[in-house]
Image (tube, rainbow, N blue to C red; front, side):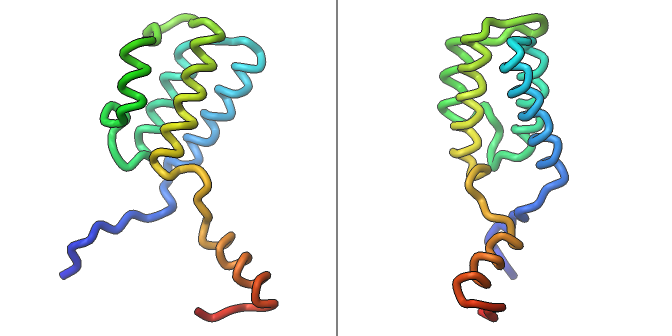
Length: 118
């Protein structure tokens, strides 16, 4: 019996996370700093991380020191801080710089001048 944990690379929630992250970026560019945008993204991010967000030490420290309001607006500085925090959390969880299987195959194809059977 296999004892190691199998985690698939594709999850149905990845598209939601990407869409909400783009929404947060647009909101930041427009200086529309509603905390609801950040809260919604956090929910999608939490579903895609290996562990709950509250177990990420970086997330825990920042959110305890600079909490978001439950609803309404936050400052542009705090909005930016949270966007930076999310980028770090995504890196910590391996959600950034991850190759999809099709990308990995195309890199191998290009390196070997055709389809490589490994």
